[in-house]
Image (cartoon, rainbow over all chains, first blue to last red; front, side):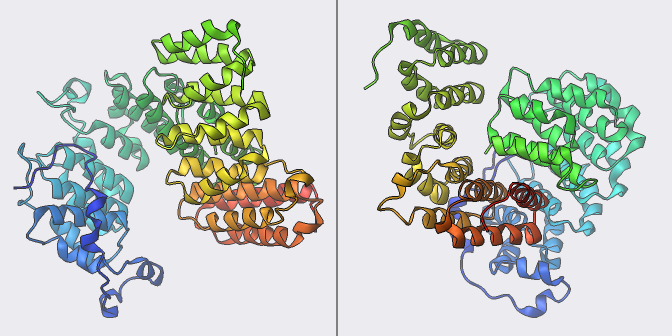
Length: 300
Length: 221
């Protein structure tokens, strides 16, 4: 019997990597539909990993789903197999969760194939909170607006309904993931439903709302709230606010990010988010770009 | 041997007794501001507290001590705590004393922690070499540039970014050195290649900035 903890970030142990490490050539005909650059990116172990999604050992299926995402196996066959794994009923936790579905959803978010959208939308109704969360994050990453109404339905009941699930360490819905996805997907129709979450009792949900509302309204009021959160007394929350500022690319936060009492790696990543956002409309020699890179240099 | 300074003992005690991250940062700042050499061992110890705010204050304090802090920093590099190791190397990189060369070179290429590698790589570009340091060790610049070239191919964008920053400061520092012309050419070629072909726009932008800043401040051709 497989035991997998009900944890959103549980990853297979990398020490188990060797069972996939056998050299196995991929028949060229299997990849005719793949553009050349993606074809080159497919590691030789990919076929074994795809086959392993149906392995009799459930832990190997779970690992294979993670592996296909980790190594960005953008292969039609891999995507089909991962979509099929979203309906898996074999791999269950003691509490009734679906670990393979979670990993398959996470992997599909990384593979960029919009054929997965419909199946991921169905996962938003799954009884497993972590499957719903992974699906919302994957739908955000795939960037297809057709999921917006399904995401919005997870906000039904508003802040009053957004309570902790009885006896569990999470709320009844994956509000953070849903609200962040709506911001990334430019779902301006969601603004009024998201706004009350800016006053939610859970900091991370508030941050997600601020981040999303900034993306949807461009009102610096929301971004400045995230800048304020860089002085939170908990390092986890400061990291979270850093990541949010990086995601929205709020350039005025640059100095506050560089000075926040957080490990340099998080700050570099957040400043990279600012710079990437800035470079989408400016060149590398603009004053702000130089200032951002000069700050990044101090964090090396 | 660093003499004990009785005036700083209460400040060291305050660090040991700090009961919150904010108090700790305040106590470390007070100790660093004494600029007393007796503070060095405690400041190095703080690098291992896993408190990024306190660590950055301690690094700034150690950098202010300059060369005097180098022997202890080198001696007390923490092999088990990569956060502490990254902070030590950041201090060594900023002090830029060539005695750190071998440590930086090895960490740049082989440390498992990217934060440590970034600090080491940056340091390789900034060491302040004097002609006497190079006597009998003519290969120092070869080894520096070949390590920077190696790490500039890393799959982690932060490592390639650090390599570019290091190339820039290395080229700038050695702009008047005739013996490194060929190495400079290799470094400039790599910068140009990264600017044109790197998959990451931020890395391309940093290479472009390096080229631009080296052009407006002329370097040896």
